[in-house]
Amino acid sequence: MPSIEVVLLTGRTRRQGVGLEAGKLSKIYHEATTQIRLDPSDLEKLKIEPGDIVEVTTKHGSVVLRAELAERASEGMGFIPYGPWANCVISGDTDSTGMPTMKGLKAIVTPTPDKQVLNLQELFDDMRKSVS
Image 1 (cartoon, helix red, strand yellow):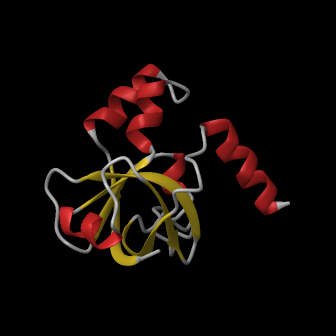
Image 2 (tube, rainbow, N blue to C red):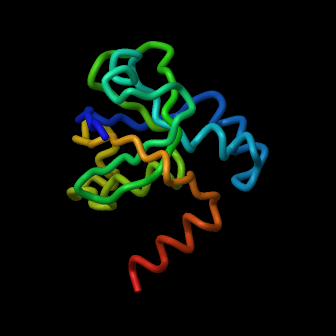
C-alpha cells in the first residue's frame, strides 16, 4: 500500500461544533471528527477515494479515520477536526505554554481497508489498553 507524508493541522469546523451541541456520542459528531481532509492529488497518490479508510501516524500515536476531500486544500497538507480522534496523534506536552502543538505535525497517511474507524467507546477502550 502506498503512503504519503503530510503536514497535519487540527482545528474547529462548523460540523464539529454542531456535533458538540448534539453530544459527543451523536452520529453527527462522530462523522465530523473521524476524518482527515486531503488534497485531491494526495488521494490520487494513495490510490483511494473519499470515504476510504486510512491510518494516520505521528510520533505521538496513530488513529484510523475516513479520508475525505478537502474543500480548500494544498498538496501535502492534512486536516483533522478537533476531537478525541485528533488527540490520538498529538502530544499532551505544552512546552510550558499551556497549549499542545496541534498544527504543523509530520504525519504518515496509509490506506488501511482492513481496519475500521472506532466509535468513541472503542477508542477510549483502546486508549486505556495502551496505557496499562
